[in-house]
Every structure is written in C-alpha cells, then in structure tokens.
Image 1 (cartoon, one colour):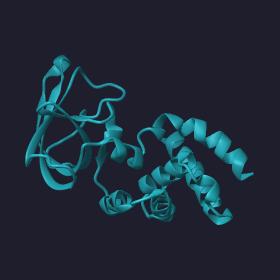
Image 2 (cartoon, rainbow, N blue to C red):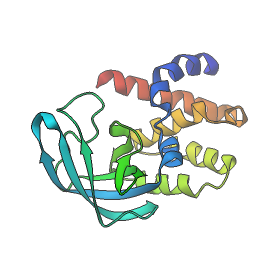
Image 3 (cartoon, rainbow, N blue to C red):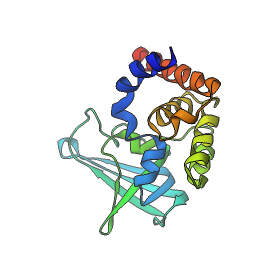
Amino acid sequence: AVLVALTIAVPAAAQRGATTLAALADRADAIVVARVLFVDERGDTGRRVVFATTRALVGDVPPRFALDEPGAAGCGRALFGLVPNAGCIAFLRRDGDTWRLVATDARALTALEPGLVAHLTDLLGARDVAARRACLVAGLSSASPRIRADAALALSIAPGTELLNVAQRESVRGALSRALVDRSED
C-alpha cells in the first residue's frame, strides 16, 4: 500500500523534486535569510527587488543585493508579489558580479516561516546521506506543512529510501498525501 501511494504521489510532485530545500541547497553558491528593502515595478519590462542580507547560511553575499526578473506577473515568477519588509530565504548562484536565484521560480525564494531556518540549517549540517535522511525524517513531524511536505518529497526521491523503517515510510506517505490535498485546495 505504501509503494502504491508513493507511486501515485511522486509523479504528481516530481516537478518540484529538483527544487526541494535539499536540492536547492546542493545547487546554491549562497543561501541567505533576507528582507525585502525595495521593490521597483517596471510594468511589462520587469521588476527589480533589493534585499538586505540578515543572515548568511552559506556563502558570502553582500549586505544588500538585487534580483531582477523580466515581464509582468505570471506562472513561475519569483519576485512578483514581494513587498517591503517581507522575509525570505534566497538560494542564490553567482553569475559574474550578479546574484541570481538557482531556480527561475518562487521555490528558490522561500517565504520565511517559523522553523524553516532551523530545518535548513540542520540540512546544511548533515555531512552524509544518513545524516541528511535523519534530518528529513525529523522534518516529517514538523509543525510546518511546508517543512513536512518538502521533507516527504525529498525522502521520496532520495537515495537510501529503502532504508526507512515501516513507520518512517508511513510518515512519508502521509505527508505526501497531505501535501497533495493541500495543493488541490489552493
């Protein structure tokens, strides 16, 4: 039954698999907790958002940095809807002297919520596959639906999933099911 549930849930979530917190962290040159300072809406030509780095989790990002995005609001736009003082976690890559998000959608610019920085810090501190798996299993019991869903998705595609015990597999299945229900209600 668990394998059937995973077989159904994983394809529905697979498009987000490359942008789990763990996958984003693996691809990032820098990860920062940031606050929006200024939003420059440029209509159809795009927007520029200036951020203040409040905490660097990985890498060396200046105290202030800007991200640019083309065009008007649309599916996959990361910067649309940001307002001054909004907190977020940015997964960044260096492109010459410029910083860019590691993914072109909002998944690489995660809204700040309780527990998220601690969970991400634990993920970043995991030194091997077993430690990362243990961190993700712990995320399944988080109070945050965001952390639970992300941990379940990451576990469903991570190497070594066969090493999960029955209770852990059931937790993954339950978290994926809840995430799919939550998504369908959005």
